[in-house]
Amino acid sequence: MIKDTLKEAETRMKGAIQVLEDDLAGIRTGRASPALLERLQVEYYGAPTPLLQLASISVPEPRQLLIRPFDATTLKAIERAILASDLGLTPNNDGKTIRLNLPPLTEERRRDLGKAVNNRTEEARVAVRNIRRDLLRDLREFEQEKLISEDEHKNGGEELQKLTDHMVKQIDAVAERKQKEIMEV
Image (cartoon, rainbow, N blue to C red; front, side, top):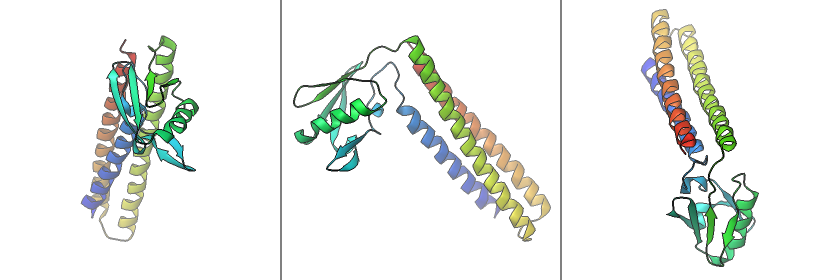
């Protein structure tokens, strides 16, 4: 029963780390990456649709993204979505494709992005701690219902804490990698 609880904790915590990695992939660094646009929602026939379902995204040059819509009628909608997003990029529309030129990051913008990384990292840590709290409560209930002994409850809590510490270290490693990527000139 404790092993199942720990497995559940590990699965949920890994999920929190995966969400963090996906989140951080959308934060712009000095290089062009299709991940910047993957989460962009485009208004398509009245419904928000992910850009990846409407176009292919490629990187023809280190500081440029090329968007090729599958349907030429979506070009204007994609352009509007990019302008409305918080990317701070201006699309160049040539009638068939959209080019996004990524300007070099200023020192101030790098610091702002670093703060955003720190905020998202803290959210991931909080998510992991909330998972720990929920599962500790479950272990306490198991003990009160006499499904596990007091010693098993204590050992399970210690194992859960070790798992939490390990996951927080992984979160910190992911954040540190992203910080280095952002500060890279």
